[in-house]
Amino acid sequence: MKLKPSSWSADFRRKKMASGQLSRAEALARSGCRHACHVMLYSSTKAQLFGRSPIKHIILMQMRFDGLLGFPGGIVDPSKETLEAGLTRELLEELGVAIPISVEDHVETYYAPASSPSPSQLILHFYVKKMEEEQIMELEKAAASTAVDHGEEVLGMVRVPLYTTKGGVGLPAFLSHSFIGNARSQLVQSLLRLNLVSSWELHKALTHSLRIHARSVEDLPALLVLTEVKRKPSRTNT
Ligand SMILES: O=c1[nH]cnc2c1ncn2[C@H]1C[C@H](O)[C@@H](COP(=O)(O)OP(=O)(O)O)O1
Image: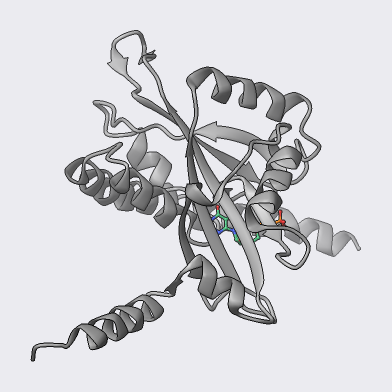
């Protein structure tokens, strides 16, 4: 069936809604929602791993207080500040530098997955900003020295390895970790959109990350047994 132009846009809107995606303006018009803004800061680099393998790009993520990987950012109240001003404020807290973020850096807005434990719907806004390598290095220093959230909400900044080593780790191992919300999908989609890693390499890395993940949890049942044994004597002591 051929759709009329008016029904194309209706069809496009329906598909976007089904994927949980909405425009920045649509999101701001929704009442009773909470908003969170996060940003992928990145730069290109000429640095080489072990002096021979090009690293190509530096992408910053963080190890959060909850042990999950995510992008810097946080909750913003649009009735008090713009989304971008709120994101800049969050960056000052987490990275120690108020990096200016503009509407042009906005990439996508989604409804958070329904499983998020919250009474009000959370809307996630994602931004991407390219910087100079020197600026990224300054940020890493500030994040570990002057940022107020360091050691508490943020345990540390991490760089994303975009290469796969001969042993099959690097990006595949990074992708096998646990991420907050849809941060892993934000990362993978940004790598594709910005052409930082080819779709072929990403496909291989994701396939391998599934195997790494399965292997990395193999020791958990044995560790569980170990802690059960350790727990028993203290129970009998009380
Ligand atoms: O990197 C992220 N990508 C997508 N969603 C994210 C990311 N980090 C957090 N979130 C979601 C899940 C969180 O509950 C909310 C709030 O983010 P957070 O950074 O924890 O906000 P505050 O520091 O508490 O302001 O967004």
